Image (tube, rainbow, N blue to C red; front, side, top):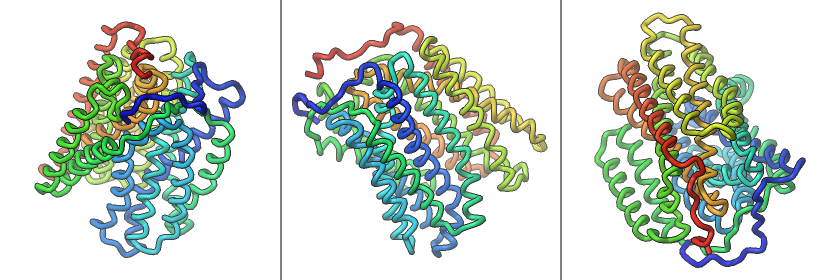
Length: 471
């Protein structure tokens, strides 16, 4: 997006949020869409073996039901974030909701693996629209003094949906066939579209024409790095390394093309902001630590500690539940207390929880596992809401889409890094590497805590790019 900014009469810059009760309705639309996207991801992951068996697919090929969805989101996050800044956030978000809902219906109607994968790609486009615009719409919905609270509520909805996903999937598969896993999205999606049409703010929209070359380079960068890393961990083949190298080359070309652009698709302008850049780095490292634990623990519970799949699901639940309780409280605190301090404390607690999990032993009681999981969730909840608030508010309002897209990208890169590390360790040492991986996750969380505390050395009011730079 390299052209000069022109006036866009439809762009409403809600400098102090929406009036009541429209604010509540806008938040409801955002929560419905977020819950739908998170539930769909967790449900599909849990139900993948059942889906593969019922459609006659092999485990190796059925993985593409998940991979196609994740890869589509990965490749489209930053281009869609830039598009939202250009044409308006709701003009990307609402079509995304429609696409996701239609894609859910397509998944339910699919009769074979190829049709299901195609529908999941369609869903992924819609999910990328939702995720790339989520933070920007939250910022436009809430007054500045309540932004942390709004982001905390989002974190609560996300964690509650993640906690409910496995249980809901098990219940649906107990009473119905797998297509109902996707059909449940239809009423939620329709409700979110109806409410969103009435209430979502018309923020964003700078009238810039899309730079399709940069969009293609961004997609190649993210797709190559993320999918190449997953392939390398899964197969150890040179193809994975080649994809990573290609992604890095595409990224270098993208940065060179956009260096000096006042509103680049890859937000190098925002990353030069110390507060923004350090917050993104903190987010990436912390999500790597989270995913190290999230992938390791189910294998440890079942294959080392001898717990059943049902017990494993219950043992994983205290983490998102504790996060859901703490995140709104942390969001309120972040409107008054510096995020660097809250994040540093939260990540230190998270590191302590991970360290205690690495020292469980061979015959721990259920309570010993549960309180450690809750400690991890509480620590991560204390960090997540303030950090997200800082990332969103450190950018100029007209770059909220880019900030939200980078926030989602940092989360995805961190999670991919953690998952790749677990895959490589299991390949070399088997599930016996679990305690060592949890110890590594604890060390990564401590690094993230240090990065968070370093933000206290920056000025209390984040430096913002001058408005003239966007004229």
